[in-house]
Amino acid sequence: MRFRRLRLSGFKSFVEPADLLIEPGLTGVVGPNGCGKSNLLEAIRWVMGESSPKSMRGSGMEDVIFAGTESRKARSFAEVVLLAETDAGQEMEVTRRIERGAGSAYRLNGRDVRAKDVALVFADAATGAHSPALVSQGRIAAVIAAKPAERRQMLEEAAGIAGLHVRRKDAEQK
Ligand code: ATP
Ligand code: MG
Image (cartoon, rainbow, N blue to C red):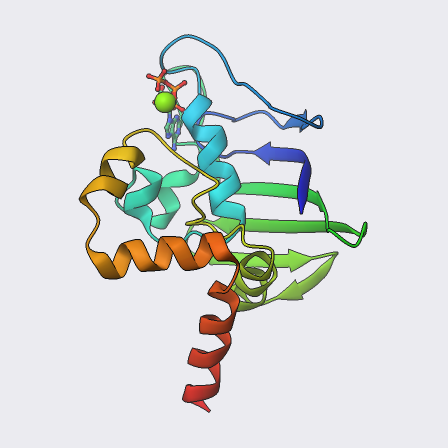
């Protein structure tokens, strides 16, 4: 799977709608401290289904919504759209939106879906929200300090078999 485009609105410091093309090859994000580089990576992780506020550097899920500044009003929602191309060459558009007091909603190619459906799509492509392909600040230390079970999960995601576990859990619940 290849990410092609990222659109954000009201997400963390990206208060105005931003539309970023992700060109083939290596992408670098440069800028001064606090300009939003890490927020961009978090937006990618969030639209893929990240459910832990802590790994988004917040205390609650709504903390991803632009909180306002002295000169700008806070936003009532945050939305991130990720456009990707599957290995089969198909376009895929994933949208996640959170509204204050209303929680998160997901869309896959314009259709309302569950968080689980989005997780499956990415798990099958070995690019989940916790994929080792996304290395955020401080993560290297976390890999080194990981317990064996956590390290196993990282390896499974890298190997592309994480989707099997999501399905097994699903089957066990039925
Ligand atoms: P560094 O180079 O230090 O790693 P960075 O470019 O990674 O910096 P980020 O951590 O992505 O910067 O951005 C931090 C900025 O985002 C801070 O100014 C913070 O106030 C702002 N920010 C985070 N969450 C929100 C929010 N919900 N509303 C408004 N601003 C936010
Ligand atoms: Mg940073």
